[in-house]
Image 1 (cartoon, helix red, strand yellow):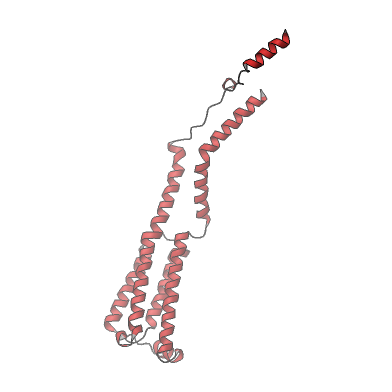
Image 2 (image 1 turned 135 degrees about the horizontal axis):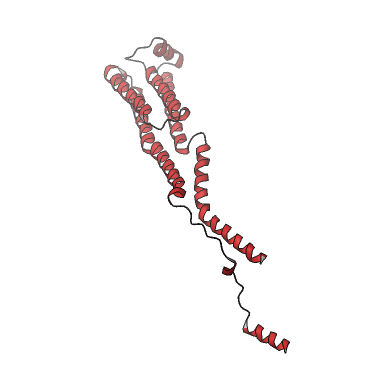
Length: 217
């Protein structure tokens, strides 16, 4: 009888484990990702924002070195800033864009596009105005390269956030909420108490019965 009772308990535990294990695994996986400081796709976005700043900085340093030396060009472009001839404002725009996006999407973890919409619109308007009003195009290859690269990187950041980061995080959250709603809408079918009558030993074989009869006779 004890073996039968133990078997019934093991059967109920096994069925419960089969019903709940996939669900619990998905919930624990989502909760583990939520405990991270930042999601993987958002981390990729922040890395690209950092690449934007470093790439623009590298191009500006190369421009300074090519056009007369870093110290001389820094004095001319920064200390004696001229909107029509200086590349310093494009570098400064990249710094401000980096600071705003990292603050919004890495520190504050915003889930809306308004912050990057502001930075991209500001970057686009400033670069278009600078190309039209300034004399950058007469300063060689960097007069074309820096504004174009800065413009393209700003729009790639917008595409990454709007089409990759926010949709994927929303899908993960909706999937988690739908999993959490399962017990409320369709509770698990738990097996009812199993009676002892449901467990039985197989009948002895015919040969065994004949042997027992011979022994009695």
